[in-house]
Image (cartoon, rainbow, N blue to C red; front, side, top):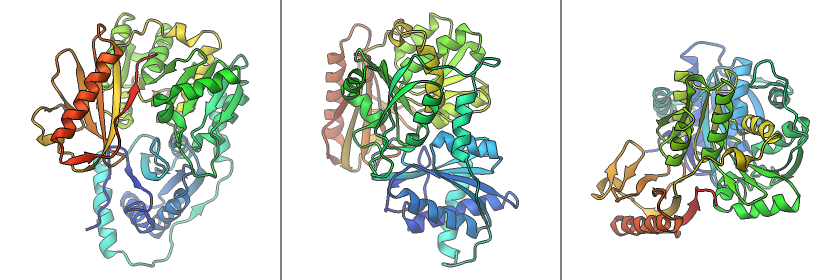
Amino acid sequence: MKRVQFSADGIRGIAGHWPLNPLGATTIGCAIGKFLIRQGQDQTVVLGRDPRPSGIVLSNHLKMGLRKQGVNVIDVGMMTTPGVAYLTRHLGANLGLIVSGSHAPFEYNGIKLVKHDGLRLHQEDESKIEELANTCLQKEPAISPFSGNEIKLHNLVEIYIQDHVRRSFFSGYPPPSLEKLALVLDCANGATSQVAPQILRQLGANAIVINDDVKGGKVNDLCGSEYTRANPNELVKVVRKNKASYGFVFDGDGDRLVIVDKDGCLYNGDDILFLLATHFFNRGLLRGNTVVTTKLANSGLEDALMKRNIRVVYTKNGDKNLEAKIWRCRYTLGAEQIGNIIINDGYHAAADSLYAAVIIGDILCHNELKDLVADLVKKPQVLVSTWYEGIIPLEQMEFLTKQDEYYWAIPRKNFRTMVWLSSTEHGRLNIMVEGTYNHTISDVREEALDICKIIEQNADSRVVTPPIIEFSTKF
């Protein structure tokens, strides 16, 4: 029986396959519409998408399902995930919907939901929508009249751009001038393509834009944050060729940011969190002298921040968990190692790579990034991804220890390990291995490959691709 099921971050899968096909999208729209109408009449949704080829079809069928239930829809068109979250809050809408596969390969897509305040929908509400979707499949007539309106509003993209250009996190300070910065912007052929160049150029930066093709359907294809984290040297060459200082790299829907510099260093979310935490702390803007991150963060981050009297609080994996902790406890700042940066200034609810880029750009006009993070000494750490065909029964492998609903660990002397299945890409297995300060990166790499072999020998499946090693430590 067909079912609609939420993952750790919305509904994800391969475009064209259930439920990310026309019937599935209409069903999901119907279910969300029923969910909203139960809360009262005159419900309005803000709808946006990234430029994947499947995005327009899925958006139109979502819209159809919503309007059949009497929900009004404001269709923004192409927009980043944090952009939809911001506009949902700004316009006073009841819900925001983003059709996007985020950082996943271009053949994937997904549907994310944010509440009226721009924060992610609660898990209990997602469960209600799942049940309503099944009701729609069983009882909803194939054709019914539209009772919800499509509301036409103009300049919504410009509203988001001007928010970033004019607003400063520091109350009483003017917006930053980035005239000293020459930046390469890798837009991942995604939703940041129409907003990142405008924002940074209006602030004075010399922006050299690459991978901004929104018509070719190649979102995240050999570009963007995930590709660069595994292959940083390609962007470093572009930075040097254009005599820029840095490369700012986004993902397909604009919630991730990583940075490379002209010297060949890659700076991930751990580095950016250290940079911003120190910056805000020195200005008395870091509430509770605390930052939030996930268990995948390099242990060296906490060691370095503790020396500056900054506390680190950990959540489960996923920016949804990060976001909830930050807003519930009113913390200022949080980040995931993969590049999701959340800055809680009371206006921006979601991980917004562009808002982070503006603030970081202001800092880098006056200081070198490598100097600002020099005190962050990371333990050698690698992330491994490999794809399997068939079942991977992690819960049945006796050498694994359950950590929480996402993670297993392998007790290995002097190494910290985490193993988990991707919630967004079926068949993808991820492994993180971290050594001590006395280990070399080669030691950790060999440990990670040994773990891959152990899992492969115990899995009722076969490897589709060889392990891909990503070094999360600066090199």
